[in-house]
Structure formats: C-alpha cells, structure tokens
Image (cartoon, rainbow, N blue to C red):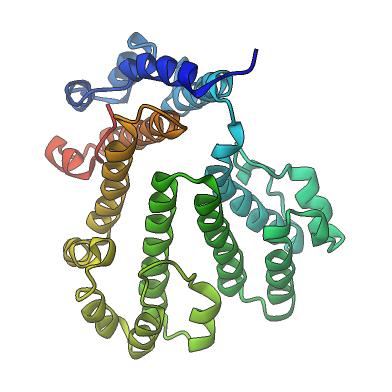
Length: 323
C-alpha cells in the first residue's frame, strides 16, 4: 500500500519524542570526558558504537532507514544530498588529476555514485552526470587542468549546487524549502564574498562564484568586496535582508559566532514551519533537520571534552536544537 503524508506525519510526531531536549543537552555537558559522553549516548539508545563517530554513523544509518520507511516521496531529500555530490566530485577531480587516493574522502548519502564520477572525470565524459552539474563539472575540470586554480574550480561547482538547491526549493511547492534554501544560498554568497575580499580576487571571479538569489544585492556586494575586507563588512552591516546586519554583528565578535547565528536562523525557520505543520513534507523535513542539529551539538560537545575546553565555552558554541 502506498504511503501517505497523513501516515508519515503521525509517525514522525511520535518519533520526535526521541530527539534530545535542552535538559538532555545539559546532561551531555555535565559529562567529564568523552567516555562518559559515549556511555550517555549508548544508554539513551542514540546509536551503537564505542566511539563518537561510530555512534553518529549508526544513528545516521538508522535515521535514513526510518525516513525511507515513512516518506511518500523520498526525492524531496535530494537537495540535501547534493552537497555531498559536489564534495565527492571535487574529491574525485583532485584525486584523479593528482593521482592520489580519494575514496576515504567520499561522503554518503549522495545521488551520484562514485563509479559514475570516476568515469566522468577519467574520460572527461561529464554528459553522464545530471544536467544541473555536467556543464559546471566540465568547466571545473578545464579550469583545474589548464590553470591549476583549485579555488575557482571549486567555486564553479559550488555555484551549480547553489542554483540546484534554489531550483529544487521552487519546484517543491513548499514555502518552507524555498525559504530554507534561499537562506542557505544567501549566506553561502556572504561567506564567499568575505573570503574573496581578503585575497583581492577579481570581478570575474565573483561573478562566477556568487549565485543570484532573492534579495541578494550582488552588484553592491561585488563592488564592496573588490574594495577590500573592511569595505565589504561595512556594506554588509547595512543589509537587513535575511537579518544580514545581525549576522554581521555576530561576525564582529568572531567567525564562529557568525556561523552559529546562521545555523540558528535556519533552525528557527525549520521550527516555525515544520513543528506545527499538519500536512505535506514539512514535518518529515523538520525531523531530519532536527537530527542533523543534534549531530552538530554532539560533535561540539565531544570536541570540547577532547580539548578540555571549559563547559561555559562549549555551551556558548552550541546550536539551537529541534527537540
């Protein structure tokens, strides 16, 4: 019998009860070392394993099994996999061209298998890749082969995936996904421009790297970035779109505070649109993004325990969770 969103929403609402609460995050913060954190996660049946990475991998595999079992249209998750697709393409390009092993760098889940990527790069047959990526992959290959400019090669591929996410958001018919991917692309552009402004890149590079998205003032950003880092930051503090001015206030504190602001903005958007949704794919999307936020929190806590970072500093770095 075909799955329905009515069934999947009922299932995922019950499944949300397994997501961590803020109280449980505090319990993780109370762990004195990584072994205690591993024990806590095992006792909570979060995932099986004797290391943090093993536990997270096990949890991720179980999450996807569950999501596949309740989702009427699993293709709605493809835009989230495309980030892994382009990571894998970059790793394959550089690995083959430098004649070094790259298999261990490949990420899952993805929509393009590693053998297809290998064939495309080794034979320069990028037409076998999905249409949204084939031309960008060929240009990236050409750039890397003839100029050795890995930064521009990566930027060409990154722009292709940003455009794909925007297209998928529009095609989905979901206001949430459109807003979500617009926000992701907007802040990806901001990060690209900031990095570029430090190195004195050209107008041409920025045109190839930045992606048009609603309410992104591309010409103003490019003009400021070419003038330099300080000029760009001053310009960005004047933009209210996507709360850019608030994000830049956090950037003035530290780049990590900026990253946290962006992550929290995306999580707030997710909670606003998915927590109380009573139809469509949003509740399943919310559960998935909630699981991803949990993994990030666990990584931050585990890293802090390894480096014996004071608990107050670890707490400051934590992102907003869905549970």
